[in-house]
Image (cartoon, rainbow, N blue to C red):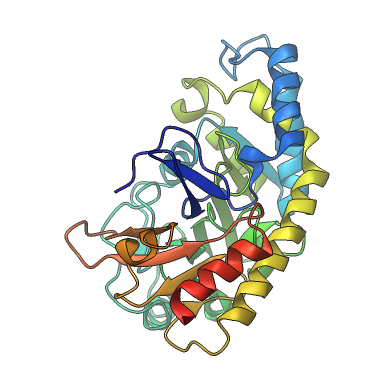
Amino acid sequence: MFQLNFTPGRTALINNREMLFFSGYAYLGMNHEPRFLQYLQRGIELYGAVFPSSRISNTQLNLYSETEKILTDLIQTADTVLLQSGFTAGKASVESIAKDSTFFHAPFCHPAIRINKNSNLSFADWANETVQTINANSYSNPPVILSDSLNQLTAEVYDFSFLNKIEQNIVCIIDDSHGMGLLGINGEGINSRLPKKENIEYIITYSLSKAMTIQAGAISCSDKNRADKIRMSNWYAATTPPSPAMLYAFCASQKLYQQQRIILNRNKKKLQELFANRKDIHFHPELPVYIFPEKYDEDFFAKQDIIISSFAYPDPTGKKINRAVINALHTTDDLQKLAAAIIA
């Protein structure tokens, strides 16, 4: 385990030793992007660090609704509700569902949207079983499907085309925290590839902290009535809203996010080329995550001044998952050094 005194970017300083940093979730590298930090500073000057008021008070800050509109337009949904964090957004999404509904948990659901145990099946087998079960039964309320959009630990983007086979009305809650800002042409996330059918209501919940470096969460709804219901909940009304300074930086950085996404995509392509002949390294072309064999652990890379992500999850007593997570700050030389560490 490495103890950090500063937020890492492409490198981290450990006991005065500079090491390449391939961990964390700052995919677009905004935490060390000078223009983003300038916007953040300007946001503090304009709004301060905190807006000390409820979202339902008689004093409203336009910045919140402006941010919600940007997200709604980006993801192409009916409405978006901005909340304090991704975890809060997930909990608010689930609470908006009738309690006597029937829930179908995918193999991997973040605790923010999890109600019961996750399925032990593979995603494909779970999807087939879910389709058969829903189509074979009747329900007083639309059944609810719960799933993450992808698994960043195994570098897998889930295929939701199975939803086309469901004949009944359903609600689908998807945690897209690690897809938002990455997937899609403009970083619109998983919604760009979801089946669009009249019998499916989508509730897409996500954190803005991963790719976009904003401490906030949001819920984008295909049904505006759902968004209105969430705005009546305590998760919305009784929590301090996100920092307006950060939201100002978010709104001002839309073009910058696109530029950083282009750089990240270039980095992904480069590293995939370097690993093209390594069948023991697993990756998905759309994700900046590379899974290594067990022997390439954190100690192996640390000897070469490289930090990777290496921990057991979700069972902390299980086998460690060794991953390199690249971001938009990494240079071609950084990527070549990472590849050379295991090719030599």
